[in-house]
Length: 332
Image (spheres, rainbow, N blue to C red):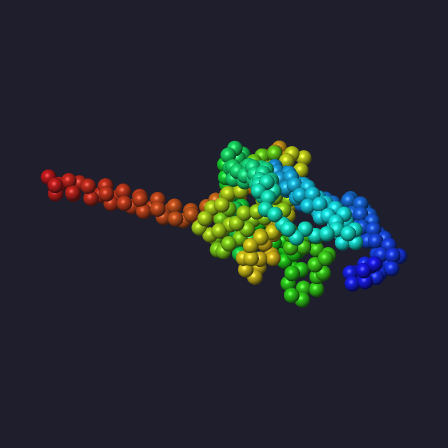
C-alpha cells in the first residue's frame, strides 16, 4: 500500500464503515416508514381539491405539474445516486479531467426542458382561459367591499335583494379588549357573519367585484377563487359549486385593508336550486312587507299635506270663477 495516498476511508476501520452504512440504511428505512405512516394524511398536506369546477381544474393542473416534477427529481437524483455509488473514490474511480464538447448532449438537455415546459404550458393556458370565461352565468351578484364589511346586491331574477354582511356579534364581542370571553368558546371565531351570501349549487354565479374605499380581496379557499376589489374598477369572478356540495363555506378578505382587516370574513351558504328559489321568494316577500309597512307609516304624515293641497286648489278655482267675467269684460 502506498502510504502517501492513504485517505480517511483507508485509515477508518472496516467495521466502522459498515456501521456508518448501516446507520444510513436505518435512517432511510425510518423515513420510508414515516412516509408510509403519513400516507393517510396526504390530503391534509396536499393542495385541497375544493368544491367548484374551477377548484377541480386547478387541482388537476397542480397534480399534473407535481408528477412531472417528481419524475424529473427521480431521474436526476437517481443518476446522482448511481454515480456516487458506482464511481466513488474508494472503488478506484479516476476523474475525467479532459472534458470535451458534445453538441448532441447540449441539444438533448435543451430540447427536453422545452418539451416539458410546453407540456405544462398548454393545460395552464387552458386553465387561465377557463377562469376568465364569464359566459353562460345563471346568476350575477355585485360585491362591494367596505371597511370592514361586504355588500351583496343581486341582479337578474333576484334583483332587489341587497344587504350588508358584517362580522357576527359573538365574534365582535369576543374580540373586544378585556371582554372576558375566551375566543376558543366562540363558534367560527372571526369567520362568522350576520348575513351570509346565498348562492345555488350547479349554477354558474358571476361576481362583479369593486370597492368603496380601499383595496379588498374576496377569497374563499374551498372555491379556489380570489380576486381583488379595487375602487373605481370592476373585476369579474365566477364560481360554480358542484351539485351535492351544498353547505356553508368560509373565507376572508385577503388584502391588508386597514386595522379592521381581520374582522372582514366571508361566509357563503350554498343551497340547492330549489332551496335557493325559496330563499329568493322569501326575501322578496319580506321586501314587499317592509315597503308596505313604510308606506303605511308615512301615510298619516302625508294626509295634512294632501288636504292642504286640495284646499288650495279649491280656493284657486273659486277665485278664477269670480274674476273670469270681469276679465272677459276688460278684454272685450
